[in-house]
Image 1 (tube, rainbow, N blue to C red):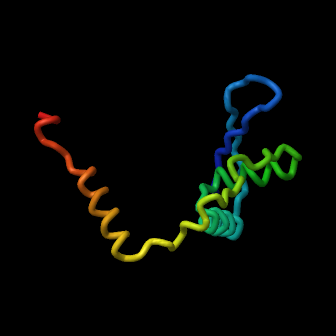
Image 2 (spheres, rainbow, N blue to C red):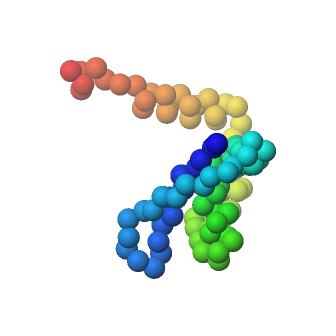
Length: 102
């Protein structure tokens, strides 16, 4: 039988993180969890926590999701020559001086 340990953070009290074990996870549910987590590039634990939070109305509002468009006009504006020039300058800055590290 598969078990998943899920950490639940208490929002109301400053308690340490709790763990629970879910028993009776059959292979089809296991596969569905793995596929959903993989599709979202997340762990099963992260996926299950989000589902539980949504179910119980404890979802966090998204943070750091504001889109900025102030540099959109620069996207794709460099020609090949300018790109090579910038890459060369950046490459020079990335060189490590062995005397500074010995």
